[in-house]
Image 1 (cartoon, rainbow, N blue to C red):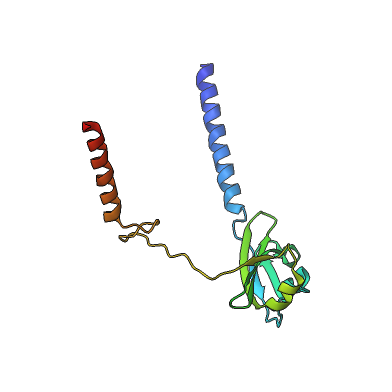
Image 2 (image 1 turned 135 degrees about the vertical axis):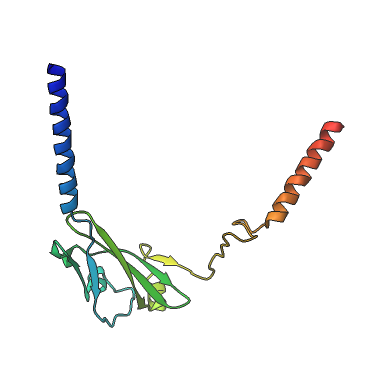
Length: 164
C-alpha cells in the first residue's frame, strides 16, 4: 500500500517538474541582440583604435534593451590586395545569446606596414582554395578513377611480391 502511494506521489511530482521546466524554457530568452550600423567615414590605419571602430554601431536586444556598451571587436583582418580591413564584432545579451557581424573599411596599408605592429592580424588573401564536393574531384584533387587505379596497382604489386 505504501509502495503504491509513493509511486503515485513521485509520478505527480515528476509531472509537476516537467511542467515547470516547459514553462521556464518557454519564457527564456533565446533571441540574440541585433546590430544597427550607421554610416562611418573611417580609413583603417595604424592610429585606428577600438573605440574608433565601434563608433557608429549600436546593439539592441528585445529583452535587455540597449547592448551597445557590450560590443567588442573580435579581430581585424587586412586584405593587402584590395586595401581593406574587415572588422569582426560580437555582442552578447545577459542571457548569453551572441550575435556576430563584420564590417569592411578602406585601409591605408602603407601606413600600417610602416608602423609594423605585431599585434595586428594581417592576412595576404591572394589565393582562394577551390573545393569540389560531389563531383569527380575529391578534396585532394585526385579523381576517383585515379584513386581506384592507385589501389589496383598497389594490389597488383602486393600479389607479385607474394608470388616471388
